[in-house]
Length: 435
Ligand SMILES: Cc1cc2nc3c(=O)[nH]c(=O)nc-3n(C[C@H](O)[C@H](O)[C@H](O)COP(=O)(O)OP(=O)(O)OC[C@H]3O[C@@H](n4cnc5c(N)ncnc54)[C@H](O)[C@@H]3O)c2cc1C
Image (cartoon, rainbow, N blue to C red; front, side):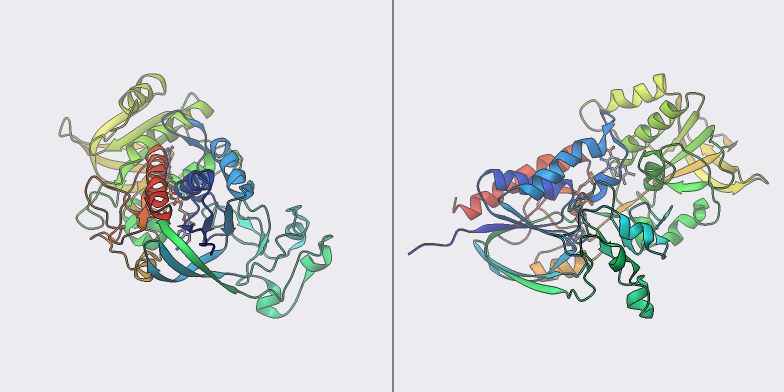
């Protein structure tokens, strides 16, 4: 009798999930990958460049996206979520809800004609609501799978029983308003890897940022918003402009630890902000080398290969001034220039500086929906609601056969997410292949 071969289930299609999927698939193991958004790629797809090399983020990611999509051992369920998991290590089963995107995936070629004609303009989530997209949209330019999605909440057909212009425009008959959500059952899953990444504090609680003028002052942005502004595919085509007057900023202040290491918000360190702030300041300087950059920090946490020299390069080659400080207040003048009052912790002086733009390095928080997912999987979370892992064996969860990697169990950078992904894949393979 043939014993059916066991597959792996990977939840989350960011860089960690993608790397784990590719490793397992290359070992000859069947992989089911479930991604909640219309396309895989996660946060890395939103980044402009990546520290410490400052390579183009999407240039590194894009080949992995298409490899993942095309790999004969990987089945991708995008726009989907895991609803139920039963069984134990070596023999799990799962139910996946695949949401209708009202587009026939095998017919759509992402030509964009439907989006051109769609009359609805709605906030673009991928671009952090800094620009509008249409109700029928591509999640992001290089997204995989390269197919459109209809946003049911915004589409005139679903909200007002009108329009259907996209259907008339599509030359490939790819629009399908009758498409239904599907529940897919997968048996014979040997092992599961959870790689659902992170959210940022502003995704769940914008109030925390109000003290820093975010939401009140147009020239106060978050770091991920700034990342989108620096990106050539972002809302300003890579030419950074202030939202108040469309002027190029000449002085930028980057504020660290917004919500992190705080008794009032989150006590832990977000771990990557010292580095990505330096990167963002360097890239801004490359755009305009008359720029003055100020980084207001509590203390620098740059623990990684070449990280300390990266900060030194920032200081010496990119005109970044690091100020160990405590922020007291942010106001604006009549031209909407932010004014920062701070205590210089090296000298004890209270000082004030006027800048053109403020960028907030906001706290990394567990991904939305993690409590429900943990319950479905029967795994434990830690006090901060990241996945609980034992000390020193970071890919193990509290349940046999279920592993984790990347930011879903603690904030970390891309190199560590990738290294962990390979670790989790190796452990999952062990379970699947019975040791
Ligand atoms: C402003 C900023 C700049 C950064 N710059 C750098 C840098 O220069 N260099 C660097 O090394 N790191 C950088 N990082 C960190 C980097 O973004 C992370 O290290 C990396 O994205 C972690 O990958 P991940 O796969 O763990 O998570 P993510 O990228 O968050 O991917 C998780 C995926 O899981 C999906 N998902 C979530 N919940 C579910 C669910 N329930 N079911 C199915 N799918 C789900 C998400 O949609 C997403 O696609 C930066 C971070 C920020 C905020």
